[in-house]
Image (tube, rainbow, N blue to C red; front, side, top):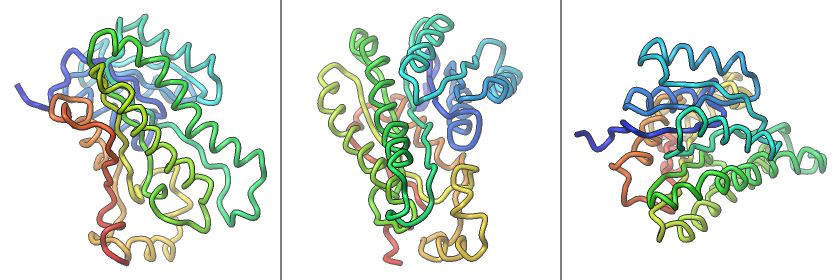
Length: 257
């Protein structure tokens, strides 16, 4: 059996109606997992779940709308996931927000708080809703989708970068806390990926040229190029990996550009 086989697993992926989250859900379904598709808009989730079920069989995916800014909404997401599939074996915290693009001096307090709440606090909530059952079974995985913004300075997405650096530390802390119980916690830090979320960073040809010029591969990444690492971390292949941040950025942070 493949080390990357996820048969028998149930993966809950937030922000999975599009972009990186959708690619992760599709790849986990490809490797045998049941998947929970979640974002704020139910119709978008249902569309993705229907496509997955059409390809991999009825009952492979369900759609549950959730707002990551609401603790009650996240608890409902967890409850509905367990009701449908009986358990959650893999959690991927992918949903995030960034309502401000520009110099730090211009960000409002409300915008700063929203970024920290949605990108750090919501992950803290959701992880602690899911992990107790993993600890009872003695195994499970949590993957937080961070960003290379968390390891670089930025003049335009500074608060977002702070939140993503915090996610890396959250993973390290919880890896230590949950490791004795068999639960692994890791981060994936993508570079510039062609998603709607990162549109402000790539839709302008001049900005895109500057960004890709700094990377070894000289191009923007695609969502499916992040999904393989998520499967690795949730499967037996990643069984001895915890507390880590896997950087997938086309060589942006290693090139010296």
